[in-house]
Image (cartoon, rainbow over all chains, first blue to last red; front, side, top):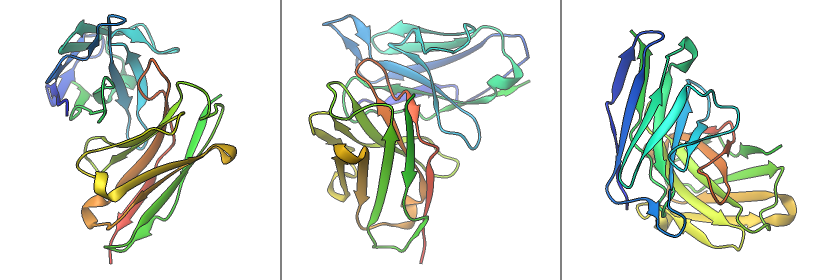
Length: 113
Length: 119
């Protein structure tokens, strides 16, 4: 199994400031055939299902604000929120869909400082 | 527009078998590249991937739960069914079904159904 490890477990950021969440996979999730990383980021608010934010490590899902961006390749990835808004308070998960089992990280809880 | 909805019992007893149904619309599971998966989330805990079924009826399971899980599809009804045997209180969780196209992760999710395992 590919183990996904996120850091930090929780994060408090002031409104308008940058938030950065890291995700590390235990093996590469880069498909050599198309040079794409099979890595997704999700946002989950209380009482709601997860929402897909980013796929292929850096491609924003349709309708996701451009303050959300993803970067990284191979085994190390980052989700960045450039200017934190109140509605961004949530738990964020990374997930690899390179191979089954499609493992998730443990989640990062993002709060307002 | 793609929608998914989970249905099934909210309470099961230990050792019983859980059967959950995911009814979806907006895509066909007979179309190449389409997949439907199940993910669960114990209260206050992280997401755990359980199983996925592919358009060609290929099936994959979480290794830790493989002996207890069965996933099937009924293309004519637009449904995917997950069964989990020998339920235990630690299996108490919200169970989600979700759509997975070829290039993305899970892009559409059901609202989830909370299943409590208790005698």
